[in-house]
Length: 218
Image (cartoon, rainbow, N blue to C red; front, side, top):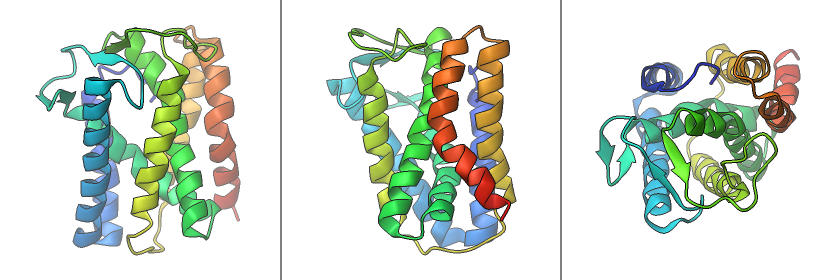
């Protein structure tokens, strides 16, 4: 997101926005299953990641993000959930097949990390022990992290396709997704002093954000 994260309050507000929209438009049972799948998968993936180095690389959390569960700050699974919701809708808007929606939605979710991790590492919330191959604009973050994010995100979005696909008025999550994209590009380019991060993230997340914005106008 465009603000400097320390950002547990900002991420919590985004989580509440996503969950309340799901509750209003998709019902209690759907929303409970969604949170269980997304927060549960995120928590398990991060716990395995910090314990073994797979699939994200060898990294560790600092103590700056608050209370932890099995070594993972509680705000982290909330972050997976908050962005998985609009990413699910992105995938389902751009693809009618469950497999396509899982792939596109998973990519949408993983592409957000092109902005998130550089901010969080710079803020000192976590770090990697060994970075041998990194993307331009993110020298402290291994490519393996982004590949791990993509694998977990596609798996998560694939499981979410099992939930009933319900058409609804989704302008709020759409606005949150596109605001995250646009503000992240702008903030990295103009305020955070990371033009390469803005370029890489702008291209990466733009592969889904731009077609999604066009689809919303039809």
